[in-house]
Image 1 (cartoon, rainbow, N blue to C red):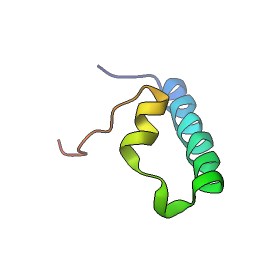
Image 2: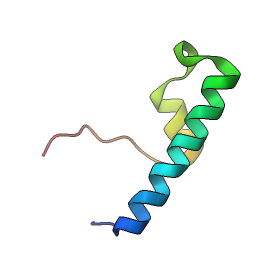
Image 3: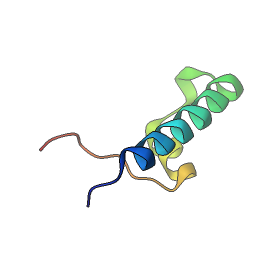
Image 4: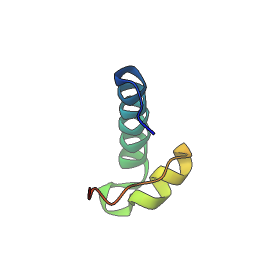
Amino acid sequence: MRYSADHKAQTHQRIIKEASERFRRDGIGATGLQPLMKALGLTHGCGFR
């Protein structure tokens, strides 16, 4: 499924906001990708096509 550019931009901003809050609260080393994506209700792709 393809998403609109606007949807992608909004999702990007949600990730940036949540990650920055977690970095400040827990530190960069304690912030993992899976917990971050789970908190946002997203999945992380493998990046291969």
